[in-house]
Length: 78
Image (tube, rainbow, N blue to C red; front, side, top):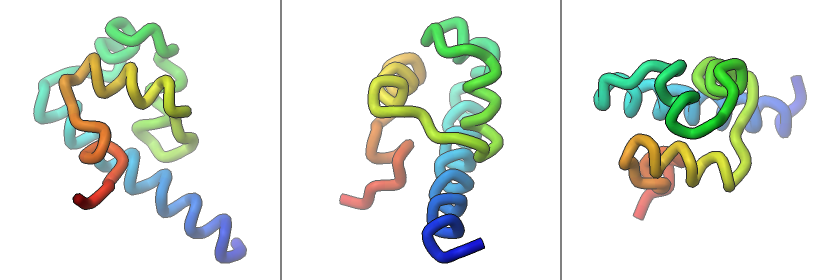
């Protein structure tokens, strides 16, 4: 795996970890997040397992559904 792919996978894994933590803190399942956002359960599962990343539109939908801060979900430090 080259450096770019490794960095991308690390970002996916970090996003997945942050999403799982927020879901657990809010006591929300992946299927419930899917229901609240209209994002397929497969996609939510992929986000939670670091297989893929949501686009900006879906990040916004996830944040709204979980009453979460986008910076927290994306790992942006202020």
